[in-house]
Image (tube, rainbow, N blue to C red):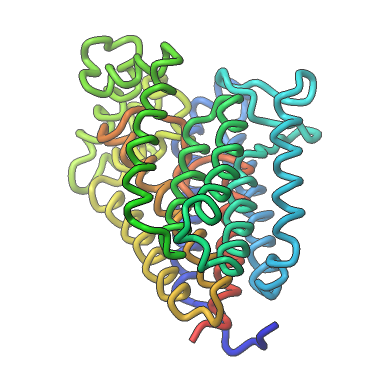
Length: 365
């Protein structure tokens, strides 16, 4: 294992802490009134988010000091455990159903989402496999096909829940790693066409997905049905203007935008803090992207480089999907905004992943 060369990337830490602070503040602002009515405690979601943030920061600090090469050794075992959890979550009595998806396993008063942990496990395994078999990735049958078969098996299990958002992030991140590892563009072209066909089939297989597509194209055609969330999100973005209505002054959080502290929190943030607040959040994400790419380029070995690419790719793809949904650029799919949205598994997993990235930065040239 390489010896530590420097302190972790302080700019990356500052951007992460900045986003986390904004996230806790916005979770409280978006959920306080609704939580007061439902749980008789306006701080219900904010307190839980602070707890998740504390656990996540502890994980980040711990993993920041664990040599990233350790994950190369345990990558296969972690992947197997995540596959077992994906099977377990589908078993009635073990898996919990929320919002029509059986995606959670209850642990006491809390719950974990195995598909979230599969994202990091898949990144770690692909980084190891591709670092050891980089030359084979240019071959379709012996290199690319086995890797894609593994990724699509995990995607299929996640879709059984179903959870298209998390599955899409995992597949997108995997493709980024495979592309950086040197896969041929011609292979991606044919696979892209096949992927479009498969995506269309997935949409056609579920009526609610078809409604999401039609509502994306014309949300006002079903204002109280499939187009409701997009319309209410746009109603939040518009009045925000340049400076916003002020912290805590959102109107859309009062029963208009469902679960405003989760997938659509960026709409509430933009309504209250305006274009400047939204731009600041996106700027901080761009800093994470910039520092992540620098770390990947400077990593001392292929495993560290691919691992860094996967982590920063996961963050970037998740941000693009979430913000795209909120602004009406892509159809609605359930995916959180990293470090900002309310959620235990997603927040803890993201901070732990950034801890791994910070450890790689300690060895980067």
